[in-house]
Length: 235
Image (cartoon, rainbow, N blue to C red; front, side, top):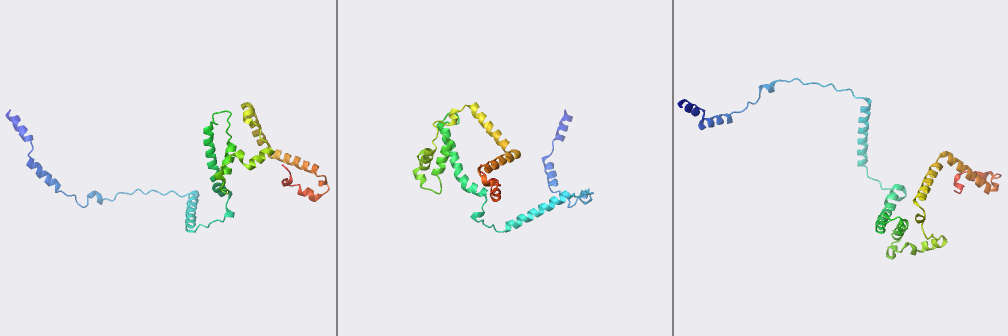
């Protein structure tokens, strides 16, 4: 029993001795240079692969492109006159500004009339687009105040007197099978008439019809030359 007690006492550390050890480690500092830092490790030299012509050309084109972009950024933009504007600018700035709001309003009106779900609907989308565009014409700002209906417009009344509209539209009278047949027929006709051989044959018959209608065509070379181009033929 006495031996065991002495072993336990020997295992217990003295707190004072532990404090002295911590002070010694805290005062220890690393040297400025370690032996391993003085060793020159071998450096692996990688051989650079030879550049191909494609890489050289791509790098040259990239450099020239950057140079052109820099030169363009330094130049002052030259404003284009109105008569040099392209068709894309005109459509974007003049047509779509008026057309897109009219289409949005027409779609909202079609939802109110439930034109997407009903097979036969009183609402006519084309008539509504015409009405919106005519009333919102920027050249005639006074039309917004009147906001006339399509059938109350003077030019529409004059046109309907000459060419009256049928009571029922064709979409109400035709069946789905008959309408699909007509659509397929029209599409096939377009692709057939688009071929070069068919276009050449149609031009031949048009010119022949002109020659038959004008009897002096055969004896007058100047008249024949004038009607040789397709621009003088009624299509």
